[in-house]
Image (cartoon, rainbow, N blue to C red; front, side):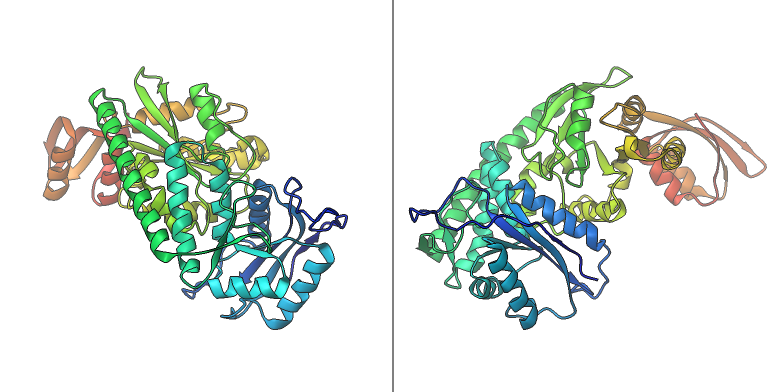
Length: 457
């Protein structure tokens, strides 16, 4: 079933009566979500159609577009030349002319050929998901490092189009000008110049990475543990960050409201001080060029003592969003021990009904690696701070165990990774009282086969 939303807009000419284009008015856009019956790897798409369409519409709103029509279109087999079938291309072209659309946003990855052919067929500017996200990042990055990272990603994105006699357009609305309409000044691309620009940007970023590394080394000498907030964009990370640190970091109900990383000091219930880091939100199909460019910033996550994964418990696709976040973290190379230093936080519980809140609360009490909060109201924040306190390296939990004396491997593991406080051997069974930090508790529970946990203090 095709989902459509059309907003009736007053007709406006793309050029004023004086013959000059109007740059102040929001551009009229058409948003298309190609829904593939199967992904390229053969697996079925898991994200709900409505949710996926809503997401790309919100992305378009985030860059200031005026959405005239949005539609989800099922595609059995993508066409190499145009992605959509010829009949669909023609019907969309008619809609573009009727609504006076200036920009068509296609929620997918378009090849340079597909992008060029669709622009010719529809007589409007066409951008894909990568171009749209780069536009947002280009408009939102404020620090020098953020600008460099987005510039690098944009150059990498454009290079594949430039070498095919493609063109990039002059900037008009901030960002990188991917949304500029036809008829603007076109600049003949030089592949060598683009490559040189990319090389310069990489050198500058390497210097900033070394500087960030020196700052990290200085913090380690203090030492303050680093706790990094990660999560899907608009999950409420910045709101939670502000709640925990009493800061005023930009927090809006908007995709990618936070782009430049922010760090603040926080005191835990035990009196221990930590550094809390707010990072850029993740999103499904995040462009690889962006992940690579932002790697320097995301190294705060890679090196963090504890990763707090903030989830939107109210979102219909929260489980799929979790998988998307995990996929990005795997690309960063932090999947191996992520569970051992991960605290999963269900945010926005104030929006849930009583039954769902009760379930989340019960699960949070059972598992030390789960928490449920409302960053908006502050509900559950004190318990979250206590769990952060417990899970940080150096925090010990005492386990009372009984293990068969024949299980020498488990006994050796406990002596190697924990502090054995007492031991009593009776009739082939050894009773131990062992102090383990949070990471090793998780490791022990994974490998534990014959031991019985009698008491956890």
